[in-house]
Image 1 (spheres, rainbow, N blue to C red):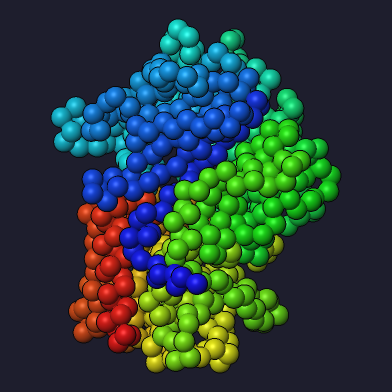
Image 2 (cartoon, helix red, strand yellow):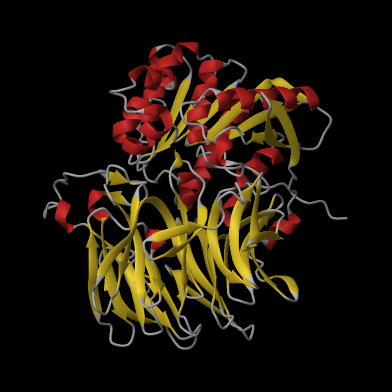
Length: 617
């Protein structure tokens, strides 16, 4: 038997990331995926087409994305910069009839946010407009609205959205509507010759939407619903469906499946399933396929009055269906994402992008559960080989409405391959449980901290752990909780806080979402509830810190602005605490997965080196 090799940083950069999979009414499949080119320091986007006769086609310009099938299933629309200089601004809409070369039908100088079909001859697109707020010489940006910037998008100018109608034969483009408060990108949908989308009623409260209906031929417009948060819309059998919540527990409310008729919305899943619905995959068999999170699993269930699990193990990341076939992106703890097909013949694996991992030693997750104040907390441990006491790393997920579970986690595999026990859990606020469990409003850094500490104590007692060599780390909310942990316990010998929050007061005005997220989650504004903002902010409690800290941040993170890590670093340093900060010059809030390959490689190297140094490996 050939011994498998260890998982490395190079393996992470070699992984193929699958963004979307779409199946047409005729059974053609389009897969959007990303591969890293470390030498050129680029993330390249490709489209892989599997025709209904099993013939395969690859669109490989390096900038092809967002594949969308026409209703008849024979024409593919997608977005690309193919043929243009890589520094060219904007993005083109391309049409491909599955032979010859794709044809560019229109170029938008500011790019396209969302692309969908209206019918077999026309497309609809959401396009950002930004000229209004930029000085002609590029010297300044001026605005009288919120937010000033948006993470991974840019400055406020991109948040005037225009809805366009595009004929694919003539290239004729018609402006249908300009929305000052932006259009929620995943809500764009065509149904029964009408176009639907959601937009905030008031930009100060972007979680309360109105549903707009437009007839593109008559330009007649009406508003159907108001006050709900409308995440996405889908047209199935000429009926309009939506993933919607009514802010039952604020912005962390679970999305439920609604059927929408004129001026009313009927909740189909309320009081039937208390799990957050992630996406409407589409019609399949005799029901509607839905993706849900459930106690660490990401499942596909079939809804038709009742619920039937049809993909119940592992982690589904995306999916698409027609009446007869379902295709989905799927991963397991020791299997990176691939595309699978489910039909009446069973399950078939369609891709082998990440099969190189078959030669690599990967670690399974072992599930553990603790009871904290009558609440069951799910968690997992990855334990490397050997009988010696293992150093440990506690990972804390983002969100807070994120979820750990049975997914493939490259960074965890990397550290496990370097001899570390990896521990992670889903405390209060996590997704995958009932709505009450997701409600962490006003309890940040308290219930969640207590539950994670209880879980860690349980692991230390049960497993062969060296409790004198432990580290804690996380990104975003996980970065915030890492900051909380080091102000509340001296248990750890190293901490790596990434793109996290230190001061809720400054987050309120510097974050792209702070002005509505923080009042919802912390309670009121800093002007109204200053003591609570201070109490929940690690920045004000740094005198308690004894743990050496590495703070990693990216300079274009507008979700948790760089002032957060600077607040920790400066305060710790000025108080003779051990702190080191690494600021990546580019990259948004999701820098750990979206950044340029060279940045991602260096981030892993820096993090691994720091933890090795502090835990004396």
